[in-house]
Length: 623
Image (cartoon, rainbow, N blue to C red; front, side, top):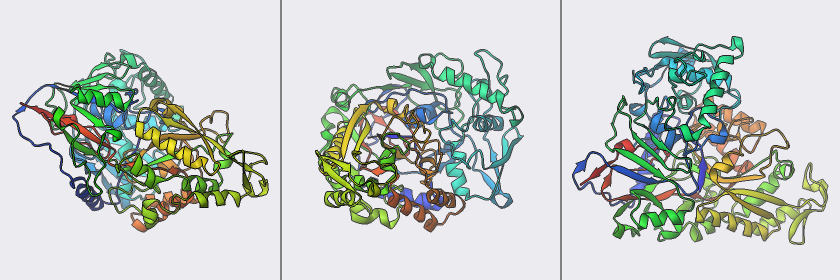
């Protein structure tokens, strides 16, 4: 199933290491056959399958929610443009900050936690510019100018929680905060969102002198007019996808890779950036990404050895042993592939739109959301559709691999949480609130019980917009529709591509005409940005840039804010427990591992980060 942009963090470095160890314990239960035999050779092109229905379609690393996905950032932009801090590493276990792969050293907190000092490492952009403190100031100024558009923005948080910032030297940036925050939360969920941008981008026309746009030196005095102009220009350039590989803008990179070719149909090739300052340096000549409209076509490409890296669709895998992360047998062994697990540290859900003019009044009723949740047969779907390669989801904290964030309530009822599958209880809940089944559809007969805004005769009908291309995901939504129909909830399924759905996911005004989508069923959220610590500000805070369902709850906002200043696990569990009870989302099974990946026997160093970060600079062929 597909997912949006995401991140995960921890309340402490030790906690992160512990969580990673837990993942390792799960992931290693069934070893892959990736023996390191063979003599390493330099060069070669690795051909990699994109997930079905996915294409890379946005290159500028400052964007709105409509362009936010793990595919555009961790798997595309990060190859070329390194964020201030990288997370994870070339394993399928780590979820912690990786300073070795980052262009800045670890931040230093002083002044009682209210001052943050960041020291850059002196890396170079491919055009010879330094990756310096001003490049971070450039990005911060843009967040000030366009925070209402920025996907990572949540009111009161960055940049609102910054009193001042300035480059105190070529490689040193000082940030003063409005109060003391948990240093781990601020690093994992605030600093993690910053991306140094080259002075070559601080322009308002192609060929203009670097820095001539004036955003880096702009202030609020002119309403950030210069930054707005630069943002508008860069965004317009980023919308011209056919020029990505030839544009003088996007060729300025600080990551290990640069674009060689880009086709809007999804075929993309990257080659090594010879000026990359970090380590390791790429050993391959190129990495070629290939799109597919359906997972069946992708599997055929694996069977015919047209790919070096791809995923095995769930329907083509044997049932997974309970205690293992890989199947007992390799269906592609004879074709020359070994298997690697792709764990995903995240959650899966359907996201109702509380501001939709047709159904907003319905889903604002907690009892209706409870009935919807109790009509999702998570355990049955996991066994029959995902063949054991999934786990139940019951709240905002990932439950697999085992970790400290999961509150007790989410582990209830075999991981289904407080509202396990029970059609009898779900139907009784609706009838006790004034609904009766008329013509097979629940209909409000007593508006005094149905809830505010619901009128007599209104039917309980919802349209779910789901991502196409993955057979098991489609079957999941069909099963949910079927079970809900048994108690009179009429779910209409409309399939669209993942990119199309996220293009419709911008938050909208209460009950406004632009709130066309009733329920977003594109997949879920992986905790790898915004927010590597699984706190709720990106998804559940009122007015958050990634709050596509427009959920708002004063108590939720209070509990989220408390997680920002306290590293107490009890404080986090209060937030997570409340979220599990309130159902801002309808939880559905999380594929886990997200996918089983097949890798050509002669391609080594390939692993898949649970944070979705792709690191092909570690890959190499053997003879």
